[in-house]
Length: 466
View 1 (cartoon, rainbow, N blue to C red):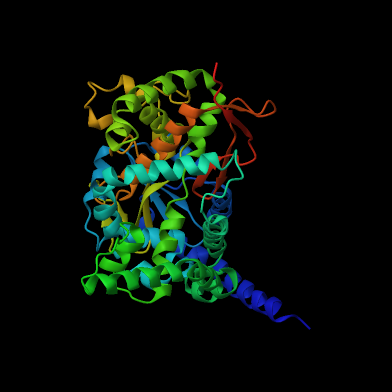
View 2 (view 1 turned 60 degrees about the vertical axis):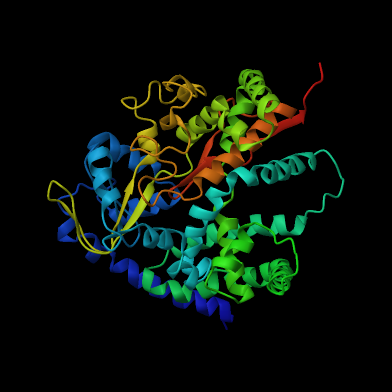
């Protein structure tokens, strides 16, 4: 007899096979015929290859059809890829009820199943990130710097700094599990996602575990609020958890915790490419250190100082450009048929996206695009106040954070955090690649996601006093 789990998988696999058999019926949508296909004539086979890494097909399409739309297959759908200012502007300004960034992100990250249906349908936390978090960055900078300093010092000390290592381990594991669960769900047609999620995700277990960490803090915040209402002088924290409690629409601990888990997932830093690049090119360590030391002597570890670290900013931006975190960005789900200016149509239910990695490696856009040039964007500044060259700036040729109204709302906070981390590293530590590591780290891919090889070893030590 088959076990219950084996029987369940058999049912899922059988139903999935039925979905695969039906794929050709969908893939031959007449409305998409005017948009060229990239990949083999067997779209199903190409779709399987894309699950392992999509950048090859995307680069092929970009080389053939730059500034024009082309399509690549998913197992059960199509992604139409667009580039060039004209096409991207058309996507950028399209109304949300036609091209939805929220629904595109929900589908790719399986938000409803990895974080909860209400998080997917009522993303009020994004507004809190965009307003509260960004506005309060100047006052949060000392807090950020303290957290960074403590985290780095813990690598060289066994001293108890009051942080909960179990929460940190849980956060990393939750993020990894969520991404893997979403990728597994891509193997099944959409109508099966609710059933598949029961067997392939651990969302409720994660939420329950997270409540064990966060529940006491949430209850303590409510006690403080009650005391404040009684006109007692209390010191109420000014952080994301408090903003959720004060500005959110949910009261249950589990619901508030789900919003925190969203922040955990999206806050997993993409800084490792910059760290690997610095370790691979130690000749830039001293110039970066000199810049950091100079501005910190003048302004301390403040937002004003962080904003003046032009070389640090350029180093991070170049790492984003060269290495990337995703081969596609600006993912939109088509809710109503969308027509390009040339008359070609993308039918409802498909996706539209921009080929960030291909654009960032286009020699017509960037000089020597395959060469790591950490001061590239410093040289492009017309003056020190040139905002267009900052890593948080948006445009059709630099796309890590997206483009338009739905660009990453947390990019300003991410920039401050990452610049602080890199600045603290260069000011206090020496680093290099392990002798057996490649001079330029190997890239790994997983669907549309990419990053540096996690097996690469970076050696770090306290800065020499000499």
